[in-house]
Length: 408
Image (cartoon, rainbow, N blue to C red; front, side, top):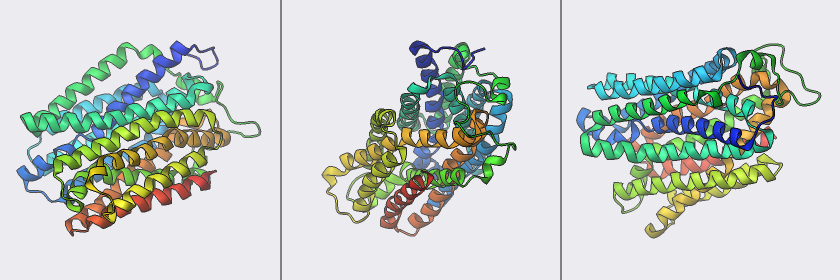
């Protein structure tokens, strides 16, 4: 069993980061288990935008609730066991989608995928914080976020391609097979991921409380921290904005501009790839700039300019793809600094023993944001208010910026 107090080599850190990032990319792939298939599902089952938006709400409501609880399980039984269980749940959700022939079946598939997704952030960040050298954490968080964004891009293209070629049921089975392959590979490499629950329970290693800080005497003591709740709010608003784009960007853009759904989908892909590139740049900045909140504020405020311009139809069609890539780049740059901001808030107040539950609770804001905000946007779209929907992205990014500054 690995002990965080032992010297760690670059190769060992790289192996851990690569494997955890692969798991994270798989979880993001399953964020888009259903949305790329919405056109076919809506046609086959006669559903509205609000109906399919509710499937996203189910996914992230289950994930958000489960994530807050999963953090406690990670601290108690170990991150590796929980991570492998999460992959298994994702595989089962794909099978459920493959067998679904009604709206109720889609709800079951969304709930299973949400349950699997709920485990990844507390498990991933517990492993990274305990196994990776402190000096490499900025780059580790950047790679973790980068592969997550690539998982979104892969999910969008893979599910749409299989859905177009063989139908949405076949796409579900294909997604399940992909998760099973990843899970099997992680099992063979489990030596690079193991973290002792006993070690975690005592808060040992190099990531204990900051000088002068002490772990909370209560396992729920972190809920009394205003900083933790502000981190939660940051995730709620920032990822709510991302949820609008991931679920509805092609449709919104096709109504605001004289473009096809296919070009709108290409714009979404540009956003996701731009976000991935931003993660790489953000990892470098997070490792060299002490003030994480300043990086987040500048990146998100600049990013917010793009949806504001799109909502006013102020951009030419020719620049839609690069504009969406810039929007993604700005949000991506903020990612590694965001993760470091949460780490500092957790370690300085509650010690390493609380990483799982603090990350689990804070990141549940991510899931709850994507669960509730796109549902409200679905109602706007059903009413034909496409400009308002895009303007909401800009507003949410500005509010998230305020929360990040407040954490500092």
